[in-house]
Image 1 (cartoon, rainbow, N blue to C red):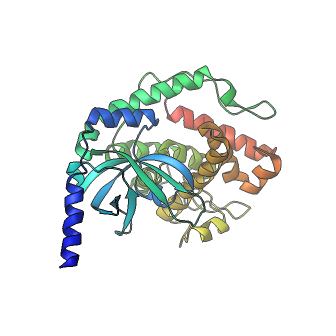
Image 2: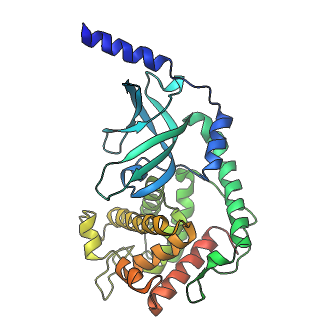
Image 3: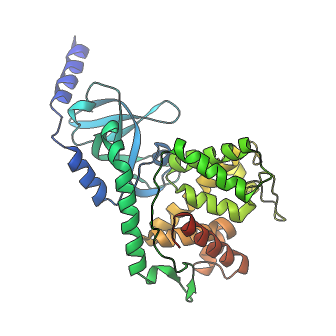
Length: 335
């Protein structure tokens, strides 16, 4: 009887947790936090440091104990993780719902627990129709900010990593399934020796893992062009393997069975650059420096970046950073 009363109390307390947030309110919070597009739940699962994400996922339920309220967000393995919430919208109570959650999350140790708090929530079907316009507007604003600031394009020693480019005349925003043929066509053009089927498989892997782990797919394309020209069987003199030229230690760290398999390799590539960029974003507080130093670490290792206090003075690494960023900007439409 006591158990029944406790459960009833929880349900009654949840019934009063709805708040009057509108889609307009949600989009305002999204804009305030500088969010351009959502990421998968895996971005939370692999987070190190502190970031605010928009998560595209499924809430499996909610509960409240001693005035502490949490959502149960479905993980990639089918289990759930807890996301704290001050209040829960009525439409999320007592139901399983696909949604967007703006979440502030922190993990202070690589293998430590995750602390995640919901800032805002919206129905998935409400956000989708307006997302393309928001992405395009945010991209234009980011480019304007970048062009207005020359300091971000320079590194210690006056080494320049950002090319002078004009803003794109048109910004394309497509769902992953619609974008795949365009990515596959680019990959085939870069490496005509691939079959159309393999090019499509690479495109699907790039788009899928990039969305899942919160990395721009165009950055991954630029990296792979510079690493292997989309040759899945590429091997360097140093022993780096496959599309993203993964080193044996990286292969072991991520439990990759076959670094020459397209999907396995892309998984490791996206996870590795994401890890580096998270580290340097936490250290510098600057997304652009996180990109520059993340690429340098991907090429030369975090130890080399630490020893030299920035991009190492290796010709290969400096050329790599310049080349990747230059191609990345062109893929984004900057000329």
